[in-house]
Every structure is written in C-alpha cells, then in structure tokens.
Length: 205
View: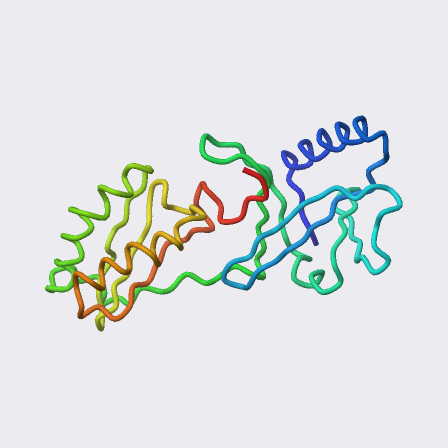
C-alpha cells in the first residue's frame, strides 16, 4: 500500500490547484515512476491530466489520491512512502521504498580493534587529508575498524544520507585509502543512510 504523508499531500494539493488554474484542465492523479538499478534508483512524480492516462496504467489510491504506475514497475512501488522535505540543503519530494533498500553491511566484532598498523594509517589519512576536505560540506568520516584487510567506515554530519556519499566514497575516499594503505583490499560503508537527514532520492531540488 502506497503511503503519502500529510506534508506531501498538502504540497501535492497546492501544486495541483496551481497547475489546474494555469492550464485550465483537471488533474486526475499523480504518476509515480522509477528508473535505474537496485543500487541506484531515481523516482519521478508528475501530474496526470484528465483523459491522458495510459491504457495499461496500474492505478491505486492513497487516501483518495490516484497514483498511476507502469505495469512493469507496479509490484516494486506498491509499498513506497512519498514525503516532502524542506531543509537548508534540499527541498523536494522524497520517496522511500522498502523493496529497494540495500542492507547495511555488518561490522565484525573483531573489527573494533583500531590499534593495528592498517587502522592507524587510515585514521591518520582521515584526520589529516580526508576529513578536512569533507568538513567544508559539514561532513565527517569515521573509521569503525579494520579486519582481514577490509576497512569499515561510517559517515556522519552532512555525509549522513547524502545522495553524493556513494560518489565521494568510490571516487575519492576509497581510492585515497587504498593508495595510502596498499594492504587494504576493500572499504565498506556501514552508515545507515536511510536514517540521514539528506535522503538518497529527492525528485526535485
């Protein structure tokens, strides 16, 4: 069952009235779309004018609001929650989908040891090079531990839940760590990004 928060519903109703007044046409509902892969999905929202629905649309209702979906996407979107957020950094609709949420990697208990040479080298790199850089965006990266040449990191501040976190890790942090500490074979992000203030998927910024 698709959920629409009260904040999102009020925003949708306000936008709906504006568009109906401007185009002098009735809005029948909202189209929900998705594209991408399980690791990176983008959601879209658009109004559907009366008489312009597709013949094969799958239609559901969320407290009276009609939502239209492509048949191929319907089964993946049936449990989403549509919210609207407004912060200093982002403003727009946020779509949360439990079916596409990726599990957060578990941290092995023995990874808590931060006194081994690899961990010390990574901590030094974070303190002297990486964190001073991400601090300009209000972020911070913490080393949780190292086990079997795998480093476990947790992102905080502006990096927590940020849509650019994956790019920052892959193109910057991971490369820097592996270059500085060649013994490291992998770097895992154990942050619960779904709980961050800045969501991964925002339709409009």
